[in-house]
Image (cartoon, rainbow, N blue to C red; front, side):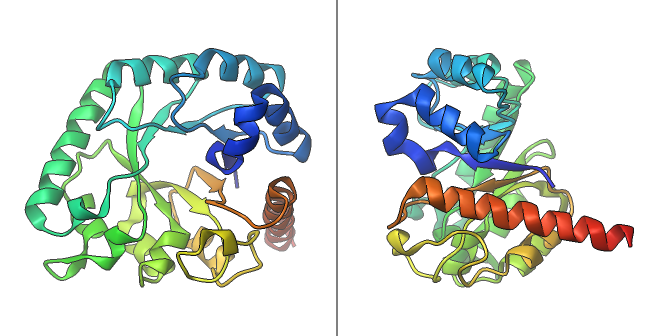
Length: 252
């Protein structure tokens, strides 16, 4: 299993010291990161990643509201092969027509991304699971409108907060899911209450096993009441120790 860290988790530290923050991420043991809104910091971030031997297989950028050519060019500089639209607000998920419009825009973005050799994806929050369209969650309805080359990054925590079973949703979305966000905590919108993986109500290992075409599991905290570096360390330790035990069982 391959793990990454969504750098939005460390946004406050990055604003103060980008190179030093990236160095700490590598020292904790991460080998991959998922940058966010990376156009403005592409050169500095690229240098920091190279200096610390980190890869960035995916990245978040507002494809539907900012210059796509700038985003894809910055992604190329950072070695990002999948650019993910991270956030489309709740009002766009309440009716079929709005979702069709969003899907068409993302399909167009994917065609442009292909010109750069970059894949496009989408990342959910809770409202795509709270809204039902034609008997399915809005996220499932949306998935059915996407061109084959598009991928999904399922935020499994927000699926649960949205009232759905993340294992069930991952099973229904199938091979479309190439990335998941791994976070934990009580299933509420209080982001300060989020916890390291394995310490909350998300069945983390069941979730990982349900994503059959998973490429990368991305650790993220939207917020955290404790020391965020300690939080991501605990998450990574939980995930890597669990992966090691699973490998041992498979080889026994």
